[in-house]
Image 1 (tube, rainbow over the protein chains, first blue to last red):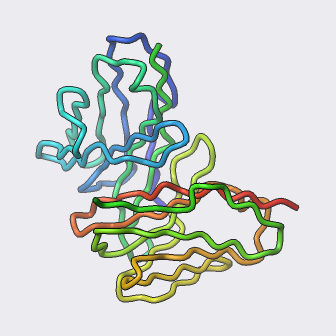
Image 2 (image 1 turned 90 degrees about the vertical axis):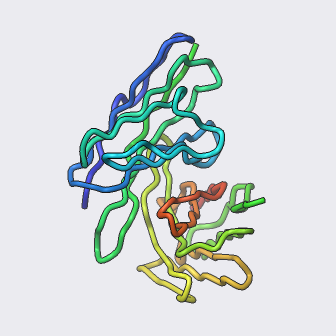
Length: 116
Length: 111
């Protein structure tokens, strides 16, 4: 089955700085997704990233805060900009992959971000 | 408003029993519904998918039902084992291919 590599796995950052999270898929995918999971909570979709077009953001998330790149069909980055402690969370990428006769969602292992 | 709700309290059951987890949703019309397992510090792992025109789906010790009239899915683990202890998430797949997650239920299976 396809693998998604996500890095860094964790980081501790100073407030006001930015962190870029990378996701690499071992096969070409059309759609990639970025999620946030706050402590003890479920996953919240941040944005959908399609190659060759601007990312589509969900309500409550904006491009200036969470710029996304999708330069090709196997790679995407999410930047958390001008961080504050409220941004401390786990960030996960996901891709829609064809596997076993259906499209299924595979997730990276997540990036645990702590902002101090 | 649109909501996907799962039992917020942890479910504690004895090894060998059947665990049943509930997922209820409102104001969505999903193309299909999925169940995921998430272990601490890891991303969700896909378990089962059920389409809107399917009533039941099975995979080994897992069974999922889907009632689009009640807007509810039930997830069963039979002959549960301590290794089944994890958080289980239901997720709706909308026709835009977006995956919207429920709140998750933590399952603890004790020997």
